[in-house]
Amino acid sequence: MTEPGTDVIQGTLDMLILKTLSLEPMHGFGVAQRIEQVSRGVFKVNPGSLLTAFQRLERDGFLESEWRQTPNARRAKYYSLTRKGRKQLEVETADWTRRVSAISRLLRTEG
Image (cartoon, rainbow, N blue to C red; front, top):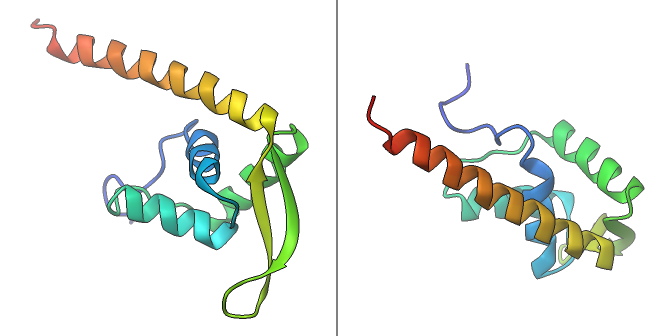
């Protein structure tokens, strides 16, 4: 059984990947680590879900990739945001903000 609150909310993984890669190009393991670190362990990314998301984002033109050496001399696929990916991040961030505001209003409603 998984710990409560550790799965990334469905539909947000792409946005979290795009945001993470907006800072700098990274390999998949680095993206997963950054998401877990910045969320203070609230979100843990399943490697299979991450790989599928990278493939989809690259196919949609939001990411590009290249093989590079990691600091510990291993080969890894590094992903970076494209211009189209930056625009998509803006769209998804605005949509997320709108949804969070709506949920907040609903939770404040006394019933």
